[in-house]
Length: 516
Image (cartoon, rainbow, N blue to C red):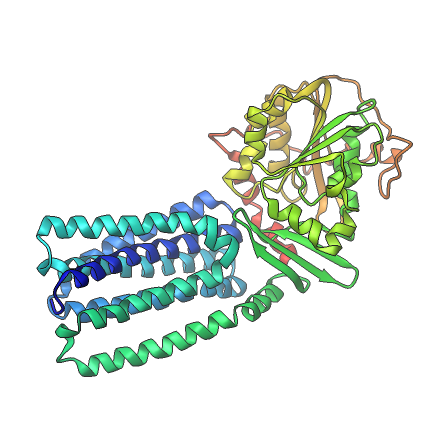
């Protein structure tokens, strides 16, 4: 080794730590963006982690071909890894806009394989470079310890800092530049071993300078790149986008219409959301005499609360939404705040930012009506909010005469998912379920399932409430399903066997058509 002494040892240990940090960050970035774009986070994380680890093993195996020029090889690998890791997220965004789902999945796994192979290649090289400084057992111990500590830091800063405050695009470039900086630091630290390779150093400096200029330019033009990408993905121009620790929020606007998307899936259009929210809220509310307390699971944008506030007998509306970014956006963005009529600031509304599953499991308060205004089950975390145990917990929080109602995806686009939710409610112990559908032009035919323990059903709406869409005549239509979308050949969605996720993802591509 060239530079001796304690300082060189500490710097090499620091490089090891940063190498482990950057590699895991790349893996998390690719897994997260793929979960956003493709849904089914279990499948995406499992595939990417598996390919990443297998590729690390492959890279470690082929590192044996390097007998000489360990330092030069390590520096090249470090710079390559930094550059590929830096452009990984921009490439994922770009390729997704140009390819179909299968092509994108193959590309992501190929990209993961490259990063994993480079990571697997660099660790053995670094171990061999440091063998003059430590005994074999100390060397391996130090390398693995600080590599794993770097990975630990990556898993801590990624969800709590990088995703919500930096974003996926900028994070990949930042850590790519850090990776490249470690390569340059290695040149300085190990310059004694590079004395005879001035030509190599000049080439490395030139490549590093050019790649750094490119990456810095990409970082500075992040806003323009994401605006271009959003315009190519979403139907209307994007006026707001942000990443919270839980999801991506995007608002598009065109003429007199704006839309909210969560992870690329449309949540509502201002043009016709009243059809959805009136149907979700007023059907169950019409079954209760003088409702006092209502629980809304999801609905952080305040639109269900807007409809509920039309009932003068209500004393409290509790909204449980895990993501404070949704309610914050709905209060500060004038378009949204105007649409929900300031419902989130009403004194009858109590906002709780907590996971709906945890809220139901630990509470004791009872409600007249529970409304589940939750996102579609695009991943296992959301799918559990349509499980039998979840509906049982909802039942436990109902008053004896109470009613629950859940949005239930599209009975036309996702019939298996819709009827699975209906069957799961029955399995949860509700004596009677009332599946129904309404036409929401932005979505198509959209389904809901209402459940209760009493057979009585009131086929009329509250005459004191003003509706834009609902009227008593609709009762003759909305509960009828044509035979081509009716099915009982579905299973119950359980917590440990989320079949709903598979039913829904079978139709994921058709559901995504609204974003293009």
